[in-house]
Image (cartoon, rainbow, N blue to C red; front, side, top):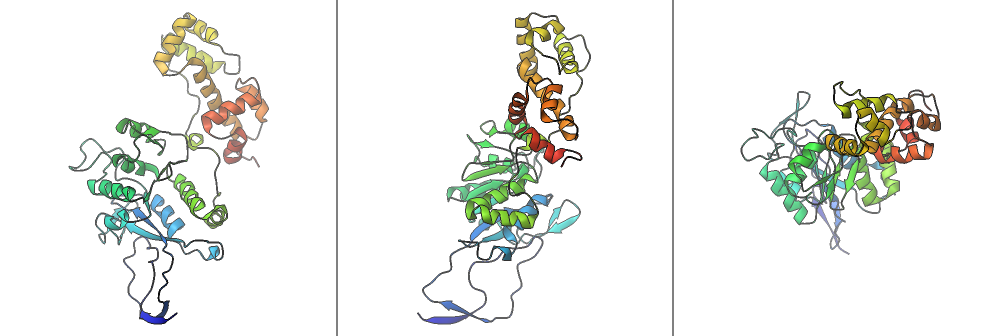
Length: 376
């Protein structure tokens, strides 16, 4: 087959570093290209940059998809990713948290044309009242909404990290789907977008074409999950090793939420009085009848008033308080799981493990391994 020489680089572009302008042209040199053959295209990943952003999440995307990967030589069955950092005004310096600026060389047209689109945040999650004209609550612009809809419509994979879920929700891409975001924002996301099924406990949710992750470091989990989907576990594990992180983390973000047992405010309210009594007697057998007696109510009346007051049943609340009380014990090196289960009122370790897994999305042993002080 005939060959010809051409000047300049050939094939798909490489990743673009944050803050760097488009690469300056280098001296021309001949490159051999076989006529009639085309290199297999890379998978283009576009990440959205905006003024005022905290750059950790952006950096995660750049690190995973934009870094040269010599360690993957011989492991890849398909080409690696090409990365494009995109903004609404390409080439314009963007102020970032920390007092520095970054420049994104690509615009939203390139974002809409990418194979995978990542939104690592929005300008102001809590903004909504007094949002600038033409912008959705959270600072999501119509231009970004349109780009996301265009990308999704042509089959792109749409991904959010942390508050980026608000942009996907504004574009209607999460309607009728399960999604997650940082636990601090979960209730707000649900209020603003009631058609979304918000799950505040998990690290990420994979809906196939639309994926969302919890806050900050959960973006690492989701990006490694994408690599695992595209290239297999061995490649994802290799990337994780260079990242110096676990290839897969157990549990969900519930385990990172402060859940200490807090005393109930003293007042003359029977429900509050019974809740405080329960907190003082967590290690004892607790029943609705015992709680009702502490509130000086009948069982039936107590159940009705407790549910109206808290939105949950008395026994489910008790289980949650027992799990919360167990956390400090698990973080200490003293005591076995069986002993801790008994100390907080579970009848056996199996019941403790079952309820702990439901509430915390991980096991007591895994929680202790992650958060225990002086625990091997």
